[in-house]
Image (cartoon, rainbow, N blue to C red):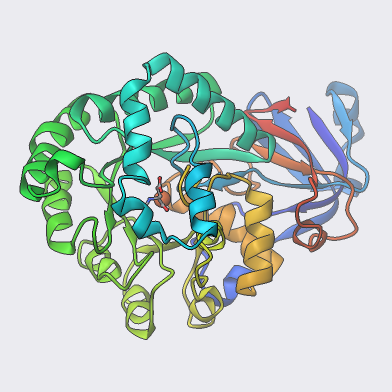
Length: 411
Ligand code: NIG
Ligand code: FE
């Protein structure tokens, strides 16, 4: 297939590098471009005046006058496998209860865990498939999905098997994360070590043996898992060859960033509650900072200090955190707009943060995240727009016209 007369072909990078500081504002682009797709792969691209007339004849042609083509979004932090919804808690929040108060009443994560326990694998799959299709239509072309609403050996394995089936059916590049340390189940409220042992001895060895996850994650937060408790889990993950990531510094400055840096984790995610010390620790490490501002939006919290972080030379990733409690949406165009409007990221910085840099946070940079020869033809094709900045400017409007996954146009 040949895409021609593309107004702007954005995000061209033959050799991907994790972008930091000022580099985050650079989005290499060709105006009035063509893009050639061979089966599921990008074969060639360039300015229209360099397109050989022979190619016009040989290929199926799609004329994209006025439209932009970008790498499909990479969403490196989601919990989109869940059952039901929690809009009752949403109303409680409007009436003044905090996320933690809702959790303390047995709501929150434990509410979703009860529903996973009661549902069949098939029913969980059906609901989650609808969500995956929904985000794909908004332009997501690679995704990470976590377990974490099982909280028992059977429950966690059930969730991970659902993710495996989603991967098979969608053909989307996908990463799977085991999040057994999401909340302490009721019966372990006063026996933390009992649940930690279950994770380290009952869950991680089985998951590693059956190759059901790429990563291990934990919720580092007061009232959830402490840095010392998580260290046990990271040690077990390390022993079984699984890399770690963390939910860090979301509701308080819980020591998550320092724990992540000490263990040289792939990423630390959230970071609403960080200061100078945490920024410095991240600058002296290879740990990737992932910001999830739609969760801060939904929980009416202060946003992470994205502008300061970039200005201090850090590279950032943005992800949706799609989950029923703190971000019931996997809408990346909205995430881009929110990041520009509330965190003062430029449109180029935000787009790099959900494409090139996000691919690194899933170790999928060789496959997706950029326009390059040999990369997967996973693309976002916008509706006609005057400029790239129109995408976040027109927030809430659907500017995605078509999405290509593995060379196939879907929508
Ligand atoms: O990333 N913070 C912990 N986990 C999720 C919320 C999960 C839930 O409330 O169901 C998050 O915000
Ligand atoms: Fe999360």
